[in-house]
Length: 567
Image 1 (cartoon, one colour):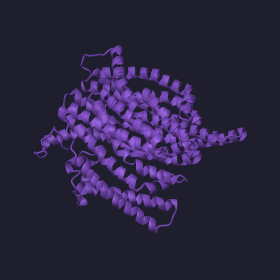
Image 2 (cartoon, helix red, strand yellow):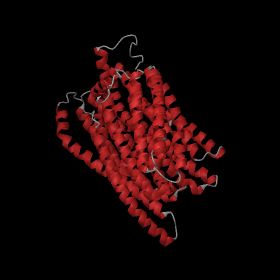
Image 3 (cartoon, rainbow, N blue to C red):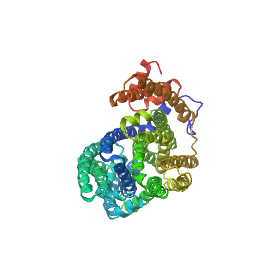
Image 4 (cartoon, one colour):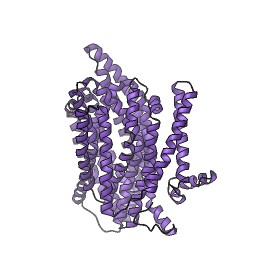
């Protein structure tokens, strides 16, 4: 990767190799979270298949709508806590202030109790109002079942943030997997049981919506159960870790003990810009839900709101799988950048920035191409229904969102990690204003329906990428390298896409119809895509041997590449 921190005219030497490895250490930690994130998303994808079969597109519409409200309140109360706590803890650890790090943990738990409780009450008592505003009143059942989860997630966010600040992602990764496993099992069981109860209610009252609403609420019960198990797991790890914490505090020779009042103020000032920027960045989903409901009602298509939003929820589930890698990388990047900034190590800061952007693009670009060319077999395999054609078209139209959301997520983390907390907020506000204007035009003037949501979301993320990129260049005097970050991965991905489409199309012509054969078709196309993309990256020079060593399991990858004569 080339930026202004290096002399492109010199070859790699030991010092540079050491600096680069140090700068890329967060990739290993981020890869732990990314692996967990992929597992979590895959589990989520697998359990959503039977869940959607139980509750249907209409029930999935209520489920997705409830989660959009829940996500915003989660950001206010919980989502910002891992980022803020990890940032503050890592900065103290870099200076050897272990006692202050423990005090941050205690102050954060008090914050979680207060703010998490307030958010839980807001969603419980405001469920009817939120559901009515979305033109989906039956989603209020799912909203209320999510209220206790917000409170649990606040405490869970503090514990995860503390461990991330200490430089380990393992507790977060394991707890995420446990959370999703329990979520999947409970969601399916509760959705089925409550759907049957809803059928009885509909029969008794002569209505049709209770079964879908109760089923959606059953699905959200699993979210709370998973969060509780994850919290208990992290609490257990924290209790085990207490002896180490005491030993670290005894080694603290800084003679600096920050007061709780000062730490509470610092925590608030750290959380506030993260909350505001994250809220503005993520509130687009709530606004999409609101304006889509209002727009479809204005066009006289109110009966299609829940089902089309449910189809959008299926697409969103797919596109969030590769974006989860960017989210994981961001979680490890923020404390890592904070430590580098605290140490005033400019070379390491720039190495981390370039590595983060490049690593995210190496994943996001082929994922975009893969979703585009394999949209039909993947959607038919995972979500077979009468609305399959619309889902395929939405997936193909919205696949590019993977690149832009991945890049905007990583660049947000970079700006937060270098203490430019207000910049993502400003950039998000500008992007959101443009997003709403475009969405309104596409909905009310062009009457594009659900496609208005897809395209306006892509433009929102693209605007964020441009504004964040300009901000990073301004604050760090960073020059983005293009060839190995964007151009070569795109060329490799196009070759990969052509091969995987050919494999998929060829198999579809020679095997009979059926879910098993469709699964074989998708698996073969995906395996071919991975192999071709990996070979192309090495043969075209998008990834060299030194960079391969810096990746997780790098030595093994180098040995395999040499045996295959592609390195």
